[in-house]
Structures are given as structure tokens and as C-alpha cells.
Length: 306
Image 1 (tube, one colour):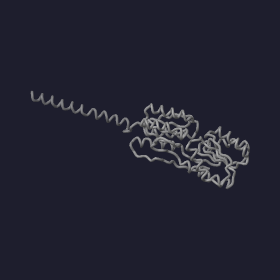
Image 2 (cartoon, one colour):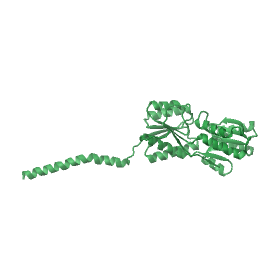
Image 3 (cartoon, one colour):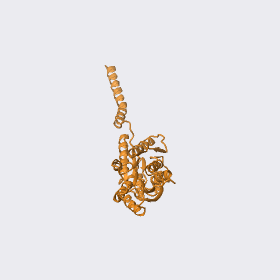
Image 4 (cartoon, one colour):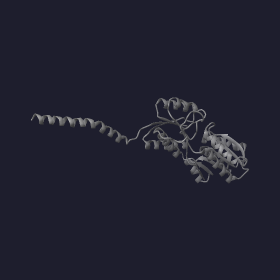
């Protein structure tokens, strides 16, 4: 009887021991199941302005893909103010984000913010516009030089060589403005008469005002290249008031621009696909944080919409 009792005690102890060994494993398995094996990253995104439909669509693409990837994203609006962007990036650093996406207001001025992130050990990826200084792991954008060439070549098709032409430039110091202008001039250099080239800061209201001034100084203008659609749409307003037939080409293919093209008002726009840029930025960020090798430049396809 004593032997039987001892045997039962031993069996109970063995079962209890087995249960205590299994429980941590089962608990971990539940945790893994709850997260589907995904690691959640915190990604900060400093965007130049959310007062521009292009960047609104870009940010929406980033948000959508972050949700799909199981990452948290914090988007801050620099409101086209380089000093505010620097402050925003410092805030993201203090929040301890895992990676910062930056769409620079000014490619030169943003360098100090990139360097601050570098010093804090936080990787940086630039989006749509480059940073002149500081270390970035990747740059996500369309080839703005190639887009400028597309616009220039189509303008020549529309008005021919020798046409009196104007260009509305974006924010001075931004890589997008610099590259789009470079591509356009590469296509039309020596083939058109560029009578005026002034900045309107990627803004529709400024595009209207600057175009009005251009037309007063150069009433013979036949064609305009605007480095984004907001300026192109502003220019159209100024041109319509004069009832002149002036061909205008924009850049970005925003919804308003596409509607103007369909209505026969805007000649064309270079489509940048901002939603895809936003999605690609998140995909590249998560891949890098997962320890994967990423390309230094991740291009997003362009096309001319006319």
C-alpha cells in the first residue's frame, strides 16, 4: 500500500512539473499568435506641407502601408517652414522613433535635422526631395530630371522651336525644383525663347500672381512649364482672364490637374504617383529595420498625362 501511495505521489509530481514547464511556452505562443509574428516599429514622417494635394495623397499612401505592415506612423506637417521642420524632427527624435522619413522643405536647410537624427542613431530616409547633407539610408522619389525632360519635349511638340516660353519655379533650394528645372532646360535649351523664369513656391495663389506679372511684362508668351500642378492651375487662372491661348504643362497629375486636362484647359502634367511614393517609403523603412539591404535610390515610375 505504501508503495502504491508513493507511486501516485510521484506521478502527480511529474504531471505538475510537466505543466509548469509547458505554461511559459504556451503563453509565448499566444503572444506570437496575437501579433502574427510581426514586430511593431515606430516611424516618424516629417512632411513639407499638407496644404498641397500631392503631399496629402503621399501621406495617405504612407499611412495605408504602415497599417498593412503593422507599423505605427506619426506624420508632422512642416507647413513649408524649414525651421519648423527642424523642430519637428527634434520632437520625433525625443519620442524615440525607430526611423524618420523626411520630405524636405529645403534640401540644404534640412541637413542639420538629418545630422541630429544621425547623432541619435536614428536612420533617415528622404522622400520626394533629397537632403544636401547628413547620412540617409535611402531616397524614395520619381526621377525629377527625367520628368522635366518629358515636360520640355512635349512643350516643343505643342508650340515648336522658337516659341516664347515661361517657367514657374518651385521652392528655391528644394531638390524637386532644381531637378525639374534642370530636366526641362535640358530638353528645350537653344530651342525655345525662355523669356521669364520666376519662383511661385509650388503654391497656386502665388502661381496666379506671378503669371499675371509675367504676362504684363511679356504678353507674347506662348507656353508655360510649371514645376508643379498647383502653380500650373494658378497660372491657368491668370491666362484665362486674358483669353489668350497659352499652353500650360504641370507636374504631379493631381486630381484638379487631371480634371483640367480632361476639360481641355491644361495641356499636360507629369504623373508622379504620390501614393506609390508613400507606400514605397514605408516598405523601404520596414525592410531596413528588419535588417534587409535597401537601395540608395528607389525610383517610382513617371508618365506624361495629356
